Length: 493
Image 1: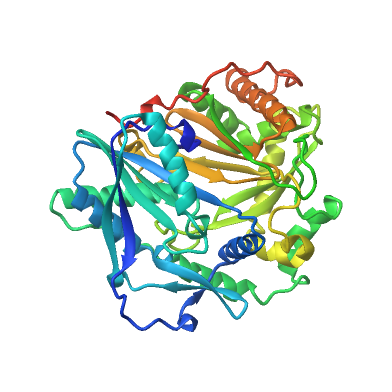
Image 2: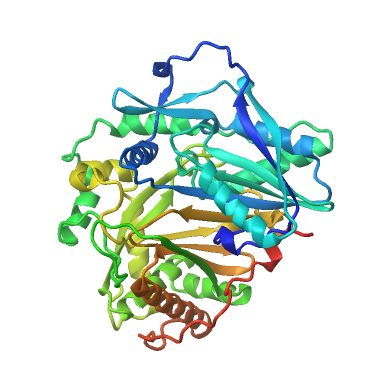
């Protein structure tokens, strides 16, 4: 399982059907919103930005989607039941969000009040037109301020089907996508066999959000738990957000259309060697990738000390492993990657920086932002290009043992941006990178050179055991064409 732009995904043509969610208790008395639950800090900020953007006629839109394959003729009633069961199982998916006395509240609907209606959409005999339709469908259908906050459908063919679900970020995160695939297909296969659906417990994200708010809503900027953030800000010259250190050609207070691209950094065999090289110096593969990123940024003109933001999953707390929601805290990390330090030395710095970060993981990012940078918190976006790094080993996700059969893919999209974000994924086919960045001439040059330098660097670590030569300041340009092989993920038809 990997992440790449939906535009790069070849979905074989077929008949498109969607399942629309509705409430059956249309005559029921409206519930008192005060009986609902409060949104998490992540959700509150996301919803507020959507409201303010709508009021300013400057919409900010984004979605997270997942697609996967079903071999053989699709049992449509079984898939509909599996999808409905999935929505009923996760409380966050059956919530409507609203503003209540200044706070964002989420009103969960009774699972028994929900139903799905199958609606034929169109027949497509061309993959390109189908791909264009799906991209536009997700853009038009996902609205943070309107329920339901996701769309569900499938492309049906005689001997296979491609199932798709696209979500607003307010109800899920990237780690939710493997859960979606595993649960829907496990339920579907059980129903096709005439069996009951059996899945492990999945506590509600709303309970997680409620616990989080009760712990941190009352703290102020003097709270000692903000000490890690404060020291990071002080070392950064008073800036809350660590800047992306290379030129992207952006102007202050301006948002830009995006470039969304992906490529493979290492093949399976080189990825295995890369992991062994990282382990040999006391690190993990994600640390090796982060060390490589830091060295490439430095060699391209960035500082010797790496400073960036890193999303960290909060599912490890209690029993949230199988829950859908936005279980992400974003934390600052800092380490030395200055010239003259070999791979082992940089990795030691990454390991120490990561350990320090994890020791202070408690305070939610949005709450720290609100308390320590209130003027920037009031804005609808991060103030300037921010250094951001994310890594997921998809082989460790629920259902990974069947990913080659199900061929799941994750896709993210955002209408506009003012910087660059990169996500790294490892699966059985190697190490991959997906980047979204501003569509400017400077950014295209900068990110193209950076990505190629990073590819050379991780390959060198795998083949030579470390940084044996300076990273080229002007690496060779990438060859024309699609660098990511997605053929194995194409729907069969």
